[in-house]
Length: 185
Image (cartoon, rainbow, N blue to C red; front, side):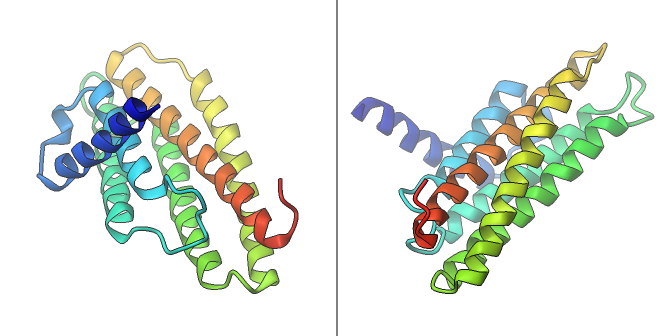
């Protein structure tokens, strides 16, 4: 167990260094991009209680930078073989994920600031539930896409991972917030 935690902690530090060092992500492969996303996610959201204290500002910054790099990676890899047209399904999925990420972080912060206000907390819980189901549906849609080029398939797999990660974070936020509403799930 200690080795696993040490590995996760090291991945977060490694990711923070990569994201802030200005590495050219256009040359990264799917495995490297996935590691960056997961490490940034761990740094930003891996806490026992998302609402006990504010999110780590540096962790959230690294997370947003990782999302930005995913955007660039997908945009680059969603083009056809000639590099002329961009796959609309991949770009729509990316846009939906970016919007869900924005709303998720916004509502986590909103709930943290107003944790004693049941109306605000209930609104946030509903938003977490909406994001959860939206990302679950999107992940299934992404999974069903089919491409004839490896670069589009890599973009697809990265988007699937990101949708699944946001779904998991929304589930955690929803479960954590229910403690404050007295619904302990």
